Image 1 (cartoon, protein in one colour):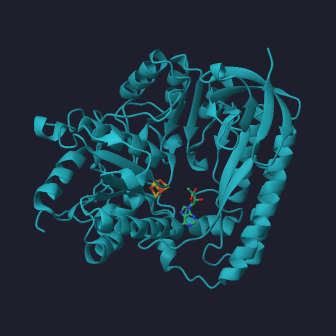
Image 2 (cartoon, rainbow, N blue to C red):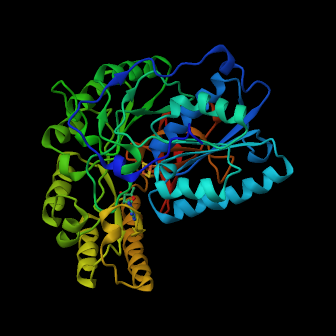
Length: 476
Ligand code: 5AD
Ligand code: SF4
């Protein structure tokens, strides 16, 4: 028990003025650990955002360094790891549901090793629950110590006991963690970790620590290597990418980084997620200037009511958001813009909700991810009075979704008979005779084409448009 490290909310909140520290040699693997997984298989299941997807790519590479082999059937794996998300309660419930299934598996094969990691285990209450009700789990590790997975696993196996190591710290930037990339054409590249915005509903600043930007030289080296290895697209990842660089010793911003990444010659550059607060003109100008920076922006609105935005701690009003939105639309032609919206935030009235609908009417988003507010323990919004009945919140969500879908279809309709560039990634999941890929504006397109085109950016004529995807044919 003594070696266990358990998270706590109080420490997770701390933000000092200290600059982030880059560490190049934190991940070390001795010869014993290199063979620990020999002859054994693993399965990693990922929940949540792209950041988590990318963390799983690190976890997989570490496991392969330890000689484990990946399998795509959980039932056949010797080691099962769930990389979890804490953003809303349903993400949480899905993980506990999955743990039920794994427990069942473990009853017939007691030698299965089970691990839980990611954002959910950064929550005190979740670790408490695991330690009391899920003692059969072998390892629990947090978002700050993925590099230490080999040692955590080794300790648990040696003691044959649950080993918990979750750190509630601001965090450092670790530069030598290996990665097993899932897609041979598109790569995730972390540019920063953590978040300091503390929107009142959001758990992320507690689960991921302080904002820490990677130094540009490491990011650029990584992208240059990806170009050499034949990758066509990079997505720069951060919780709040527009604030990139603010915590660095040097004077270097997201606009500078975007420009330098574009100059590496990689064919497509994307970035997520943006916060309207830090989205300045320099950045907009760079996006407009470089053809290889994709005209696609995810710009979370969260609410259209300035009153609710204030309660959410978003630092912009409805009018300021609309001004930025219109600027983006006018300066970046043919840009597609998507958003995130929360309904049913504590105290949201019908009038507030109508303000949200009004913004959607005005912005006509290409698409939107919509959610009902989910109280997260420890966040300020969790303590706010929330009297709106669940049914009313659901009705608001349905109404919002109808409007969002209407504009998503309208936006897609503009593509009919147009010729667009699509990076073909592989076979369509729905129809194995079709290939699939995304346009520059992030529209999903299914294309009737020969498999030789996989991995190429091709000109596609759109022949049929649906709400969430399009069909097309290659044109020469
Ligand atoms: N409840 C509902 N939705 C949330 N999001 C973040 N926190 C919550 C919460 N507590 C949504 C926001 C964010 C997206 C990733 O998830 O819209 O942009
Ligand atoms: Fe989920 Fe947020 Fe963690 Fe991503 S950063 S896994 S969305 S809680």
